[in-house]
Picture 1: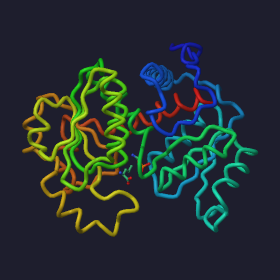
Picture 2 (picture 1 turned 135 degrees about the vertical axis):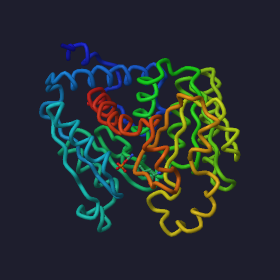
Picture 3 (picture 1 turned 30 degrees about the vertical axis):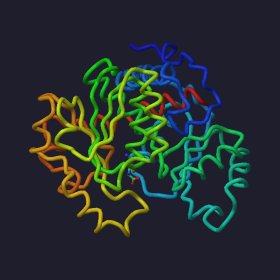
Picture 4 (picture 1 turned 180 degrees about the vertical axis):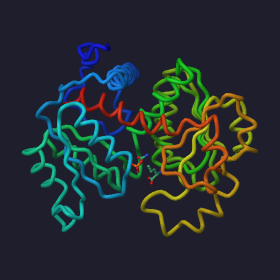
Length: 318
Ligand code: CP
Ligand code: NVA
């Protein structure tokens, strides 16, 4: 049976916010992945742990969620702690109470806050005023818990991350941004293939290229998905219309029409390429059913890994 003691080895990031992987060194990310693997193994073996006994996570949601909500709540319970689901509309936050006051008040009651919100500045403000660690459960700019689960999935299937070729086809959005940072930190080559006008944020591109330079990999942005997927070890896509962009849906359907991940596109990748998607997916839009439900797809393993990486994050920062 896996030793929980071994799984409890510490990384020295106690008390730290988890807002973006840019704030973590490659060694710390590697450590979180190692810890996630140990916790996953322990969970699969039915080993119990109570390393977060008495700890409470407050979870503020300003947008919908299935995976983030359930995996954080289940993760806290599995580690012996507790999680509170806080819909922002039910909080005074939804009636105009300031982020600063909310942060200071919640810091009196709970041990960490996970928030899913719109602007990244808002989570930075919350973290600034909170006396407890704040975890990013998705902002318009980043989705770091997702990227950590994505790295774990690629590593489980393909082994050593360094030198892998990851190709993201679609919108240069929050998921793409976190993947760029995570890949660059771990020496994974990442190509973003997106239509003109939907490129990743320039400052995120610059930051990830700096990290890639330090870790011997490349970050490339192109508008040609066919060329991008040649030699891909993993192909990733996300919805064309993110939460908060619903008014642009019709225009996006047209603008992204040539960026669907389908049988034709994946022919150019390595035969044993892995298909990844953060989910929720829209079959027939960004990906066809043949691809997402096909043999190369690892999307449910990927979704499952959200639980394990988040347990690693929680156990390390709490
Ligand atoms: N991938 C992801 O974050 O899913 P949810 O929106 O369901 O949380
Ligand atoms: N880019 C998507 C990810 C959902 C998990 C969104 O922000 O809606």
